Amino acid sequence: MLSRRAFLGGSSILLLSRCYATASSERIPVELVRRSTGNGLEVVNLGLPLPPGLLDDARRIRVLAPNGRELPSVAREIEAWPLDASLRAAQVQTAIDFGDAQRLQIEIVTGELPEARRQLVPIEDTLLDPEGLTGPRVLPLLPAEWLCRSGVGGPQVPAARSGAYAAYDAAVERNFPGSLRYVDSKVFSTWLFDRPSTWYKQYVRTGDGKFLDAAYRAANFVRLQTELEGPDAGIFKLKGRDLKYVYPQSMHLHSLLTGDPRARVAADRMARFCLTRWDPWYRPERYTEPPVDVDPEQDRPFWTTRHAAISLLGIAHGWEMSGDLAYLRTIYEHINALYTHQRRPPDGHAADGSWRQNWALYDPSETRLPGATSPWMTAILVAALSHAWRITSDPRIPDMIVRWCEFLDRKGFQPSGVPYYVVDCLGADSLPAPPGDPAESTSAHCMEIAYSLAMGIYFTRDPEQRSRFRRRFDDQLARAVTLNLNAPPRAYNWAFHASSELVARLQSVDP
View (cartoon, rainbow, N blue to C red):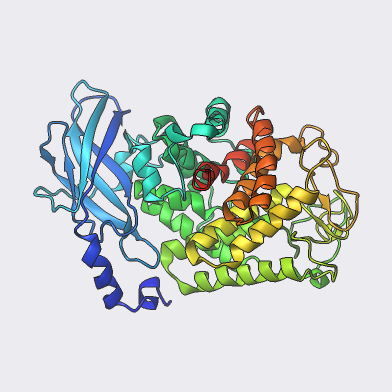
């Protein structure tokens, strides 16, 4: 395997990184919440995410007690930033006597060598149960300002600074209690669209322990339900061999924020599954129409923007975790395939900004439209492309997203303003709702449609186009924040998984 660091040219790049990283010193307050019973020392374990260029050596981390005295501590590297070699995250452990207190505040200092060291203990010794299904003995809460600055959850702004977009965070708060019913659900569909990552990003934006606790428990549940060995390593065992339930991002975030090596193993298996189990090129000549009474995705070749998105996002996390250039090459293969598909559609009809497909070759029980696309499935692809753009800076990605939003504005909405379930790209027979499922209105997808439009607003350089996208965005967000986004349960995940980024993106372009 050719690694990221070998690709960068080895020691000369590492030396360049270290020239500016080792001098950076920061002081990060950490609130500790004791969840165990009894007295005595408690081992505190956390993953400390770091912004690029801050630090290159995990040994240069100190921990200070509430009175300012240094606590014996240990730190190890979890991961380096891609194309940088400075630390992206470090696992930090210390021990402290809470006495009768339930909460204490310590401080982590970067860039300074500690005077007192301790040994790293197994992650299991820091948990209420060895598998982490009830969370850690001490819940360590980092400030939202630091978490957002670190970039651990992508481009984010603390919820306290949402400003004009505060309604978004009010919707998160209102829907969160209902989402907790599914923290250890054995029903596979409640996990669709990555519940642990959704909660982790909400923790990043708030620093609130309720989100961290939910994410911690859910991530360990997913880890235990992940096949780690054999030909199907990486799959979600509750669902089986189904790419759309494979989320390396959840295990990656859990690893970065806890240092749990078991999450890293699961993330590796998941990323490898994403790398090897999806062809990013839409090849209709290779697909056959499935019977209407079978699972259209079971053990057969097909293509959707949703699956293209999940594969691309998983591969992106594989690259970030491993530096294996096979992942980076495949990211570019995905970008090439998507750019070609959008610019020169395989059906021979004129390009319209969509990634359209013959829906009968995917799921004829929904519709047989020969040229169709899904606004809500493509919202997942917009999020994956956004992540790939942060890795590659490929100029084709902003162009693709803007072209998609132009199509969405032109043809993606019903006269009422609710998005179509499936858009007829070649005619006027768009599908307003999923057939046979009256409980699932397409209005439940307004939040992720709003996210897509926010990314179009961010990337376009045309003032008139930005104004049109903004009108659509305002309408979709206003609809979304009124909804019960736990009906169906997976709606919480599809609504909030990627949309947390919209506040940061829009604030960066707001006048």
